[in-house]
Image: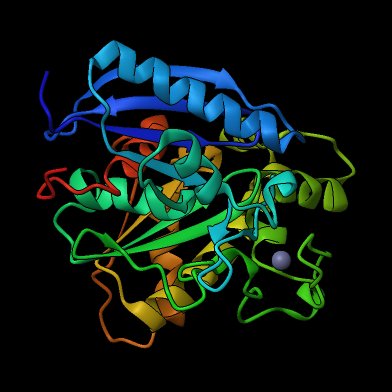
Length: 306
Ligand SMILES: [Zn+2]
């Protein structure tokens, strides 16, 4: 097999996915296992076993990239900002490299998503791509020239814990966030936030897919909930455009499946963006669920021969 294969690992809160990706971006082999939640040592072991299994399948020791739900602190090398909290404060990169006996590359999972879509996905033609995760949590990553912008504190693109911009009086201070502050974008734009917003206004317990479905069928309450969601997303993304002015913004995560967002958000964001014309495109992801492993694999870019 090609020596240009690389291995991408997507470490999630409930599952760990691994894949071998070739230089053209094709996924050659893929395996998914459950994450040993709350158990750091078992998480490291499971990742190593998964890498070894993939290497046995492809017949070589390929370079390994790992997408993590957090960041590696540039000052300590320890994991921070992980909503899989059992990883926080742990030397994950060091422990994996020790067990494997060679260097690996780790990056935030939203950064991996942005890199995947920037390399050969929705943002392939754009110089600057902002990748947004709208799921259980809200994250973001920036790719410039098909490279991740990590940042001095390894938090570039961490948009979910900025406050909701241009808030209305009833949006202040906003719901409390697990990060310790209130009114973070994540508290308005995550899947659970959409469900609790609907419950707050209408007293109905509906999941985000149920809200979307009912809105499409003409339910006025659900349409109003989605309308508030759409306007908040437009405001949040307008502040990103005003700062880094990306050519493409790609949505990922479960809520990226809401079709109406792609039409309505760009219509709404113009009033908040400091430009007479806005040519930034809001696009669906090309690689869907594969972006995690693909982006992790692309931490070893195509022109870099291991
Ligand atoms: Zn927060």
